[in-house]
Image (cartoon, rainbow, N blue to C red; front, side, top):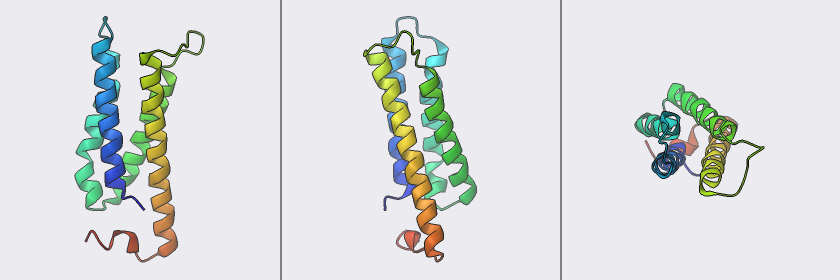
Length: 124
């Protein structure tokens, strides 16, 4: 099983890089385009604490990642949808967030079934 801090780092980098690409390719440069890079920086800041297996941070990162994925989906206009760079990057960021949340929940369920924290023994 892939550790949550690795998934968090990959997801944060996707949000950061794709969000900055969206911001700099938009000629208007709206400040709301920086929401995804902001979430990416927040998630990267939590990676150290995820590595130390802080449960509060794990739950917070799961909620923030789900919120970021929902925000990316809500930015898509269904009436004016067309396959361009803007919508493809939004879908990619949302998909990345939802896959990360699925991994977080899977890790949590697997750890609860084992009840002895064997998942994290090689990190400690």
